[in-house]
Amino acid sequence: MSCEAEASSAIRSSGLRVTSPRMQVLTELMHAGSHVTARAMVRRVARHVPGATPSTVYRTLSALRDARLVSETLMAGGETIYEAVVEGTHHHMECRSCGEVADVPDVYFDDLRDRLLSGHAFEAELDHIAIKGLCTGCRSAATGAPTGHAR
Image (tube, rainbow, N blue to C red; front, side, top):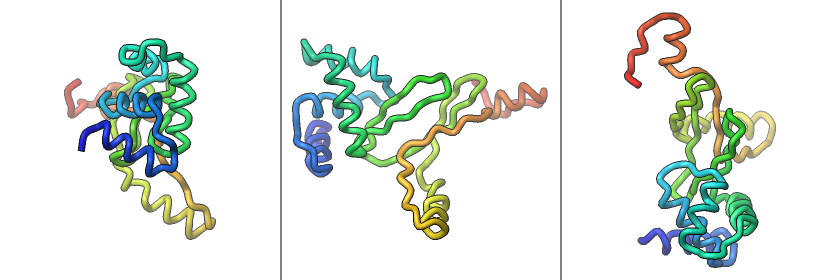
């Protein structure tokens, strides 16, 4: 299935109407291959849709986020990033020292979801979490131990 067909199907399945801005933003995020800031998304969309306004892109990102087709994550530096979640959810570990970001599979949070549901009758929507901490390299640099990986 093409990205456009997949985006159209995902939008429709979420209960939203398929519109040109929604299609453009979601397909751009799907093609991005990584996380994109709203500012960068405005630039990407403007290349394909002359006259697209930043407010349209921001509203579209919000609508797609609310439909759980796009994740929105506030990173340690205060920047918000977006990513298509049509193919599944994952989370991030972000080093507060060097800024390195690594993906964390969603399965790591299954136990937390289960505990919140059984212990508090709360069904958590853990769509996209950024966990701040220190990566191996920065932890080792702080202690003087070898890093065990190359940068």
